[in-house]
Structures are given as C-alpha cells and as structure tokens.
Length: 219
Image (cartoon, rainbow, N blue to C red; front, top):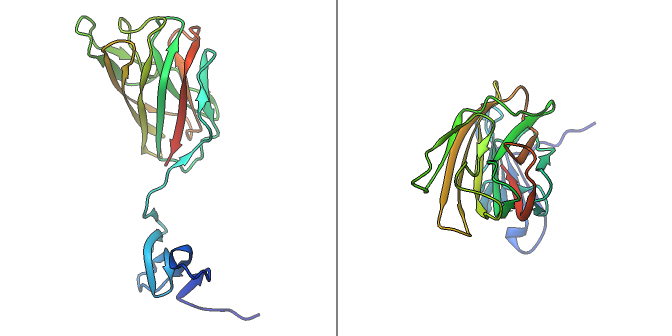
C-alpha cells in the first residue's frame, strides 16, 4: 500500500477559482488550513486547525435550526441542539400570550428543562414598575409591563462561559409593538449536563401563546 504525501491539495477543477478549495499543511507549526480558491492563489480562508487541534471558522458560522416556528401552546421547545454549540441567538417577532405571567426562556439538557437556579433580573422602560429578580429563567417580560394582547419583539442571546460546569449566560433586549415600552434582562445558569434544548414559556406555565414567530441560530 502506497502513501501519497502533499502539503497542498486543490479540491475542484472549476474555471472559476472561487468555486474551488485548497487544503494546505505547509506551516512548520502543524497548522492546517482550508481556503477558497486555487492552489497557490487562494482568496478566502474558511477553516484553520492549529497545532493543538483548535478549529477556527475564519468566516464565522451560523446554522439555523430550520424554518421559523409559530408560537402556540404553553411552551415552545427547541431540542436536539448540537453539543458543539457555544453561542445561541433566538429571534422573536409578534409574540403574545393570553395572560399576564412573565414570559421567559429556560435551558435544559438530556435530563430535561431546568426551572430553577437562574441568577438574573428583568427590567424595562416603564417607570412605575421596578426591576425584578428572576430565578426561573431569562425574562422576556416582567410583571406590570404585559398582559393579554401585549406584543413583544426582540432577540435573546446565550453564550457558553464554562464547558466544564456547563455555565451559560444569557441576555434579552426587546420591545412591545402595541405600546411604547422596552424590556431587557440578563441571567446565568449552570446546567447539570451539556445543553441540548431551550424552552420559551411563562412563569406560571399555563398561559398560552396566541401569536408570534420564533427562530434560533447556533454558533
């Protein structure tokens, strides 16, 4: 059996250079790189693997879970989140419920969604209502700023802080579209295992989503 050795290989034979890729391992430090373009004339780095095996996606990566989901029922679950995910972005548009309970995000692992132990608070631009601590999730709304028919839009972001303790931090920035009010919150939560699911629900668990669209991006 023979072995072919090369420190640079072109993948693709298109006459358009940007439709080909080149794999190189020319650096003395053991770095390997996948780049767009022809061998010897690449135009854009795509993936770099350093000597320690650390993978860098040079152009970034965002993978949608799929088509957007209509909010309905007492909870909207996103499951099957890959174990390599380090950042999650969730967009909400036109979300409303039939009640006044605080809307919130909760994280979970293979053991299920975790409903306690969140370290955060939720606040907003309504002067008559004070910020509120929230230990059950990342708040999207807060008491005194929402009721049946209130409509919310915004973005939640979660970032993995420590993969050993499965510690995540999250933030939300949003606003009502039926009234002049902004809302914002932050939290952190250490899970018992690797995150694989996120839930949008309410604190009382019985209010029902009656409108809106939600989608998720993994990085």
